[in-house]
Image 1 (cartoon, rainbow, N blue to C red):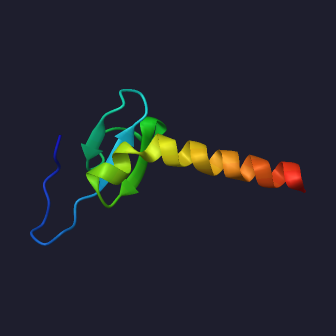
Image 2 (image 1 turned 90 degrees about the vertical axis):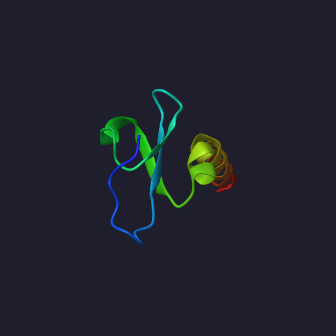
Length: 64
């Protein structure tokens, strides 16, 4: 789904955690949406990045 954009406006991409889809614009509610991301590819890898960050933070906590 695409939202109407003003010419020259940069698109924002979101990851829908419920469906696993990458969406352009805020087409769904916040409760299932991660983002915004500058690119479709970045949004597609949102969960992977979040999991990696969580593992890193958990490791930091365990080391303290």
